[in-house]
Amino acid sequence: MDCPRAALFDVDDTLAESFQPPRLSTLEKLRALLERVPIALVSAAGFKRIERDFLFPLRHSEHLRDLYILPNSSAQAYTWANGWNEEYSLGIPQEERMRIEELLRAADPEPDARARVIDRGVQVAYVGVGIDASLEEKRAWDPTQEKRRRMKAFLEKHLRGYEILIGGMTTIDVTMEGVNKAYGVRWLAERLLLSPADMLYVGDALYEGGNDAAVIPTGIRTRAVSGPDETARVMDDLLASCAR
Image 1 (cartoon, one colour):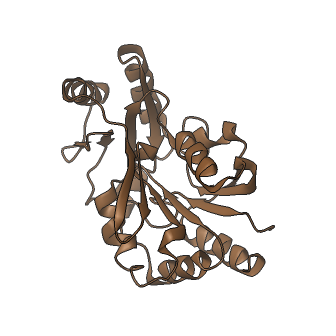
Image 2 (cartoon, rainbow, N blue to C red):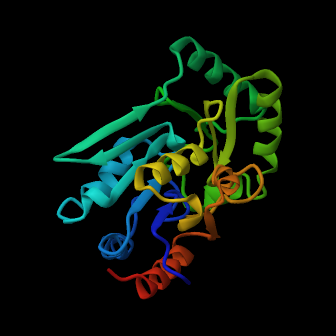
């Protein structure tokens, strides 16, 4: 693998299991890779969870200025300069978020009792079996994405002007139209004075309709993974090929 000039990683089902913290070994690989190339975490997760699970463990790194956080499907961006600072935030009006929540609930005709809607202001997400469900339950809920594809079709019929994307094992994410992970890729490329083709994106949802697939039209190099184990091997390859 050739060394990219920046490496971008999805979080859930890529760097970590769904809604779970990453392994210590993953954090150590991230810390080592950050010494070699700029890194971005591009995730449907909110900033607070990324801060807890990644930024706090990495707080002693001397290379935090080379770490970029693009949470809520790139609806926000954060950079380090004597603390984490918000670079932009592309919010959804409250009355629209309420309407999106109603439609997300209506889109699932047989909801699990633990299903919930998460409103983060810039993104509204539907979680099919709840954040605290076991990994086995999450895998069993919609293994082929068939259920969420039906939900997505329903939402696209009734909700105009928004991005509606499948993420991870159990989620559907809604952001403003044009606000997706491709937006984050382009913002980061401009920030780093790079072409997207100079960068590498690693994610589990690069299939059609997946929230990672939005990055493909940017021209960024991509690497599809099946989960944290395969991501760890990709990171090993990057550590071997990249040097400063």
